[in-house]
Image (cartoon, rainbow over the protein chains, first blue to last red):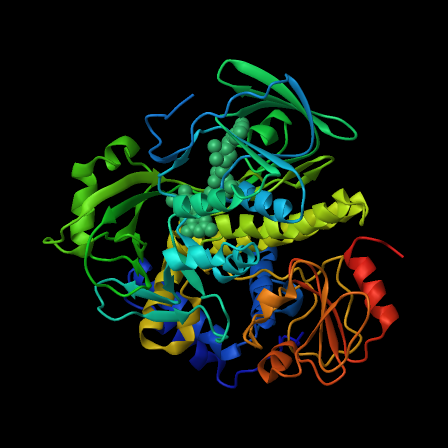
Length: 76
Length: 522
Ligand SMILES: Cc1cc2nc3c(=O)[nH]c(=O)nc-3n(C[C@H](O)[C@H](O)[C@H](O)COP(=O)(O)OP(=O)(O)OC[C@H]3O[C@@H](n4cnc5c(N)ncnc54)[C@H](O)[C@@H]3O)c2cc1C
């Protein structure tokens, strides 16, 4: 099983966020759902390893259950 | 009891008179003469056993049921001598095409026989009633087979060493004391319900209209499936060719519909014309609605009562895993029961039927549930994801294998079978233990036609005593398919499933593996 990288791995985090949030700007919910779904599939194929994706899904689901983890969030 | 108004008759069989005694004793009673019960009867009869089958109806039904029979099933029927008749009558196909919306070209296409050069084709389409009559005709040659038409099981009392079965024919009732009862009495199994056994799973809230129609005309022998076609917006549809100019049209209708109205000719015909064109000339064969469930019993073996086919497990039709799964049960069961009946294996061997048939049922249920979830997604995100796959598939190859219009039945591997001996080496390719042997050309014929119905050993240039040997060294294709290097060997069970293989076999390893495959624990 590959290790999941939970350390910062993107050198322009604000650009990434702007890309993702901008992608659904002006779309209806249904259009946005569709676009996100296509993006998930493209990202998944890029990663390629189902077990990695399954781990990422579990991590994503955990964050929802536990809310944010104050120990790891740095406020400035 | 005679023809029921809601079940069309294909071949009347006539009610078999009641037996002369009200209490009979027999080794094996099969309940249900559907394709699974008939296949079991033929296999056991050919192995020399006396079998009695009781069947509630006194005719073969002409209603719309299975049409797609997979290669593994054809291999099994070929072993039983009816494969050639079924293939000759059937429509051979191996290509599936998936369409989406009004796009004229398929967004995805699959080939169901990636390994060529085998005797049997990937699939044959043939009406279930043709299969049943071919099996019935084959059984008529056996004096040790007694089929009783119009005989219904009412009740069963299970004891330690057998079961007492209460049977009714017309107003006459009688009892059978059977050492073994094989319940192949279909989805609503009387045997299962009177024994109070569970049947857990999912019910899918959807209706499908089946229009079997007769029409002349040339169209390819392929499976055509549509997501959201213009002629059935928001739903799916399926088209299959059958023998005798019969075509199966299958339309998803959704849940809250008037089922009685939906099968009226005036309501069905607009669908047919919308799919095939306004000018299509056709005659109705049979119109019906079906819904489906994916469920199975938690155990298939209950003392002397063994469940097989739809009585034990149900799947959605997408993927053609129902009858194909049931015939696999028959194949798995019969050689084991044969060894037990003739005292060559302990009754404990049946536990491996329970394990292996459940593993196969679970695989079939998993595939057919996933296909159904893909075809009729229920939540907003699930619909978005499904549509995303279709959108991407129409443009990019990576998404095409995710398009799920039914994963068609292929041989199931019993990867964790207690009967298999683990490989000594980990560099094996080929057919692993627990997997049905692959066919291939051998001499003037085919491998599967020559492995026979007993244990056999596939070898490459060596020979061992005590069982049938088939030397594959003259067939490079087969040596490659089984990854048999010179001196290697592969033990095949009577159901043509690989039990063990060795790069460096010896007599004692082979004997130990064969004992293990017979349920004899060291
Ligand atoms: C529309 C449709 C399409 C399908 N397409 C396919 C397909 O393409 N491929 C595929 O593999 N499968 C398909 N299936 C599934 C397939 O038809 C079933 O899996 C198959 O019929 C199961 O065979 P069986 O012998 O277990 O049971 P059945 O065929 O149901 O036979 C049970 C028999 O038991 C008898 N019986 C019932 N109760 C009693 C009793 N109390 N006493 C005595 N006899 C009794 C009945 O009369 C019947 O003859 C399809 C099903 C449907 C509905």
